[in-house]
Picture 1: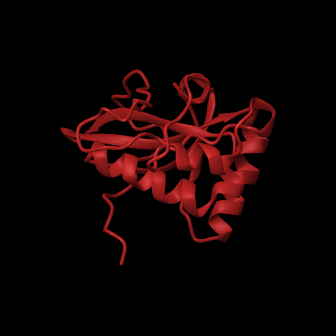
Picture 2: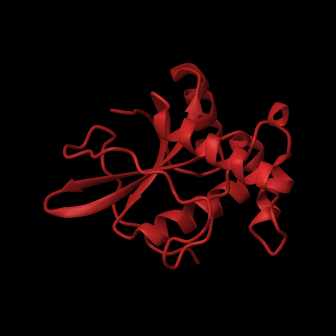
Length: 157
């Protein structure tokens, strides 16, 4: 079964800090790389990006593309929030699970973790982007919800 997640915080919960991009080199303690899904017009397809972190060596071009995508996700004004957890490594693992299960919907998106504090507890918002506008994010979120994945459209502050 799935691990029980901490309760989600509202997208506008107080104490938001600058968005943190998951380290695409995979050097974060206890965490692998994010699973950015480059858009087809950016080169490597979803399968190549997903397998790069699974024993195959990613080219420098693939790494650079993943870093650019992660930066765009973190700076995206509109994001989808998929959860909020007290453990950063768990947040990254949840992203990998969700991205793998929903690669068709999350193609061209990357993890954007936002640390926040609520009630004296530090949480890591699991957010994904970039999205061009709220309508695009809403369509993706509705499709994820139809598959049983909780999400909400959030504005990056």
